[in-house]
Image 1 (cartoon, rainbow, N blue to C red):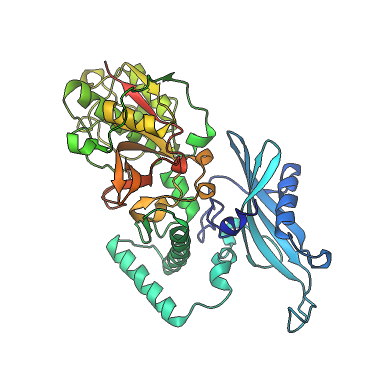
Image 2: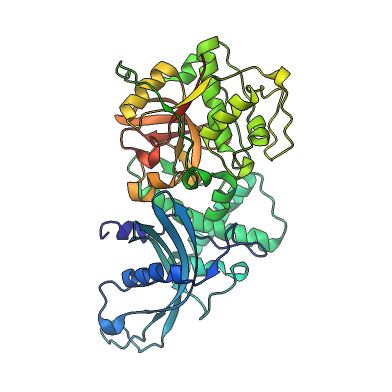
Length: 458
């Protein structure tokens, strides 16, 4: 725990983001303190007061929070007021000051009854926890609020934001919305710098097309919470490849990968991951590379939740149940749920089965080189600001327990002796390296090896 805290206190792990003016903070409501929240709240306070003398310890005020169930426990997101005692120590305070109230955001993981602090952010606030819709941005930006930004930095950041608006053709409905988005952008630049400082790979983080979205907006719109919340349907374990993996491999060079697609403002990454895998499997068996329909899965998969997320294992079952996949030309992508318009007469591709793959990355590489691109799920930590290079986040920041994005492994290799997975994403070619993400290989980075699967085409 002591090793984690200096990193986790930087506020890099997922947590609540402030809501823009007039908008709800997210899909989950913040609830008043319940008995279930008190244990995690007391633990958070204990961590906050760690190392302090008895007379200098802060007290817990109002608490609100929510809980997300995970496969191994519960993740508590708390907002709490913390009352700091008056400072009367002349060695610390030049003048005695009155009691100070802080608003803190805590993330606590409860695994098998053992608490672990994942995040702690505190800043000055009024003496009550305000309604989510009226929270000020300043409450959540203690790093920027401790001192005013130097004027030259403020001017530079404003210029960068103006370039961002021009580059990505942003328009905002009101002046207040534009000011809010600029504040979010500033906060995100600070966050990207922290991610950059802690990355052990060669990745560069900074301005992307997602830089004016809060963390919660980004997760709600583009990611897939079902991957960590729903149990995956059991599949047969694939037979391992006996031959060792070649030093490098790339199915893009061999004609098995279609162009990068864009899921838009829809959490349908699961459908893109699966169609990418089936496209590769069909190409290897039939010699024909077809761009297949994600919209068919979004509309017609009755088990998954369309733009609210899904599981690759369910999607394979849906393809078998439906009788196959249409092409994108016949059933084009719309990026929102529609009435199922599947036509059996237009099916161009079928699958016979689906298999789960080994979590050993050497075996995964061997399977990929021999059998084709692989559907995988990862923790998308840092991807909101990823620009290029090989990402290698610290494991506590990119835990395999919190996978939330489905993608496609298309190859692997080394760059300047740094091993990587080449990953096809579904956020368009104006993100990452022309739509691709490169992640460290061999360390289980971001859970890349925990949910690998493939369709089977005989």
